[in-house]
Amino acid sequence: MMTPAIDPVALADLSARFSGALLSPNDPGYDDARRIHNGMIDRRPALIARCRGTADVVDVVTLARRQGLELAVRGGGHSLAGHAVCDGGVMCDLSLMKGVYVDPARLTVRAQGGVTWRELNRETQAHGLAVTGGVISTTGIAGLTLGGGLGWLMGKHGLALDNLLSAEVVTSAGDKLKASQDEDADLFWALRGGGGNFGVVSSFEYRLHPLGPVTSGLVAHPVARARDVLRVFRDAAQSAPDDLTLFGGLLHAPDGSGTRLAAIVACHSGALAEGETMLSQIKTFGAPVLDTIGRTSYEATNMMLDAGFPRGALAYWKSTFLAELSDTAIDTLISAFADCPSPMSSLIVEQFHGAAARVGIGDTAFPHRRRAFNLLINSEWLDSADNARNIAWARRAYDAMRPHSAGASYVNYMSHDERENPAEVAYGPNLPRLRALKSRYDPSNLFHLNHNIRPDP
Image 1: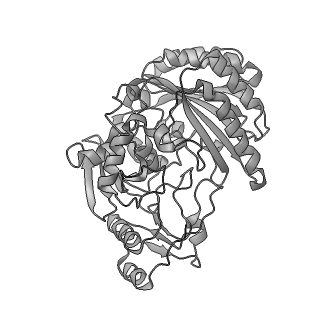
Image 2: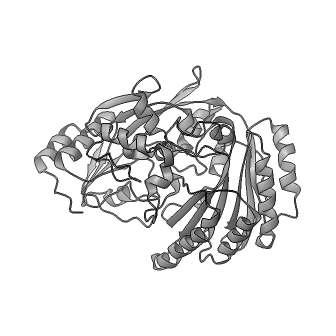
Image 3: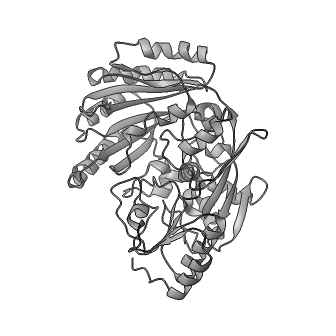
């Protein structure tokens, strides 16, 4: 797509009142600012607008609309699919917008759109409070919340989006709206799962929950025991209370040796004594080669997998909810992992249950509301010469698991080269309402650099 050049008069007008920083390709800091977490993405915007506040966001959106420019929106910068950066257009960069304001009396927190979960957790845990965040602390709150928000507290408190109380949104028309259950309720519904399709969210307000130390960590066994490990995981997950969230996985040892392991990752957010008792079954099963489960903080829990997802690594993901985690599905996962070409890649099965599964399908835009297992095929490597074979492995693993798929996918786990229609598998029965709301709030599809919901014709 050919993007028009930015009109110098319009750019000078923006520069005269902009509170943040405007970076062109020859400016110092431009190359670092255009880089996002996924090293596969290498794009060069004509302008990076590093916003300081909502007024900056309004001006950037207005410039892009009036000039007919491609517009990408960057929050925390993970953006697996690469939508946070474009070639030749404008990147609306929120990464300098780091304000976090905790109200311990009201049990709420308001945070700007550039905040990461590590930053939010640090401020809320200073008051003994928390909200469901991601499982990787470097993830931005914006993208994770707008797409869903799976995390360690989802069984007890629901997804990140289920804890969203309000959002400040800049629409394609340049209007600044507050969306909540009481104001612009339709927009609020769409934001909770509809991704970045409806505007730039400059700040988020969440409900908080009291939370002290938790019991969490990982147990790992040699991959030869994978069948038994994944069965133990499945059975424990099926009977788990809301306080307990479990992931099962096939992965490589964190020491870089390439040793293949079968693991169970756990977080119990209830009483510590209960957590120790409940997780004893997992800790005492077999003879694990690694056991880190114990009493720790929620902050540390959200950081425990960070090393497996380093900034700059090349990544391609596939994902699907499973109809069930049958013995046959487990065997298929094991076979697929045996073919894995990179010592950084993994197959992760996430438990989806409790409060997150007790919300109606149509209550939010996020439709995946039944007890289930979500499969993440994480293909990750360092050398671009290996792109083709690592992408091919992820696709082979995904195709092998198709017979076990529930035909639905988590939008935050979709890569940049999907063969399915991403909107259909991400939004299912909620897609018609989302398209109608897209027509109301973004009829020209200015916000199309996402897993796009097209306006009704």
